[in-house]
Image 1 (cartoon, rainbow, N blue to C red):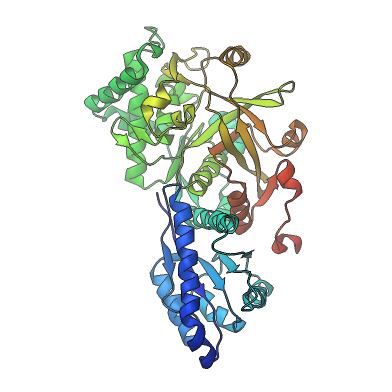
Image 2: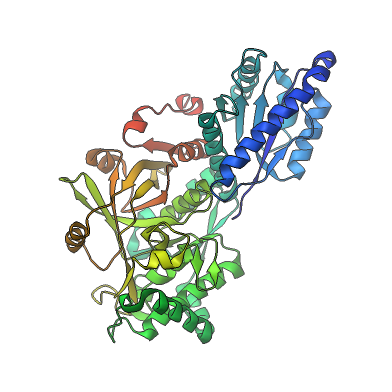
Length: 497
């Protein structure tokens, strides 16, 4: 997974008789923070490079030297550690080695032996009064809750600085005139730095023609071995040929992403592909999955109907989770008697969410491939059907109000419903599509008041803290639903607008 390096440095006292006495202890504090952060992030299988400065900052020249050192190491965000009193002006020759949009976390232990908190507030206050966006955390490196907060900030800053120079592959443009799915160039570039490159779906079709037939057959045989009699060939809409077309679409988009250096993507699908080539569901699922018939792979975010707001949201969720697959859903039906949403559409639910397993066999044991609905998708292919496994999810969606970005986010629980109840609920929408039966932290009226689009995205786990940090770093207004939203306090730069 692409990521950016995180620098850790401690600003020290300027007086030689003081820093000569404390430098060894202060360097040990920074090393311990780095070790704790690394251990926490590696539990999720992916940790960005953590670069510890070679010495503490004790004068202007060491600040400049360490800044240049961290810059050469590719550092894009900085954790400024505090353990003792420091001379605040020394922060400037350090941070000015980087661009003005450098994410900065000010981090101090909470002990009485040294005035680390005093140094943090003096120095971080100087940065903020000059307009720098900073975050602050105070706590001990042996406190799991504090380490969790720091890890959430690292994930957030790494997501923002990684997506900053990425390109969204827009295959075909926004589908069916859905303007909430359009890549609104200026606000997204200003907030996140990413851009879009549009490729016509004709190019996709032409590349499909050159894909190896043997590789396509390997994909089909893999699905047949995993699904058995749950691959419901009907001789018309779902046949070996139409399934192979979907596999060929996956391989073509994968190739184009690699050829053009596209970091994440979306496929328009409707109406050109779905009426004349194939339904995109299988291709989109495979792109978002952490595996295919060739083994484990990194998920590539791909949004159904080329929904750019969804794709950007999914890419951020991917990075915030350490590289997990993400979900793309329609906001389909609310069941008030159950206080539950049925989030479903024919598009790209990653198969990972069937059982939350890295093993395809375990996930596909709960999946059925149905013939595509001819009413909507005349070119045929498979619709992927399963009910998401129970577990904690984070729902989110990037939106715009009057060209200003905001993000709605909510903690949620995917529910473990009895099979007969799931079957009955599925009949109320479409039983051949994937479903997430979810209870959100937040009421129906709250969701309806703030949610910006018909598509919602999600990732496994609780990522609210990281998402809030990411929004604040990017200047995106976070709207947190439910109880956690009531406790949210906007950062100082939002209050001063």
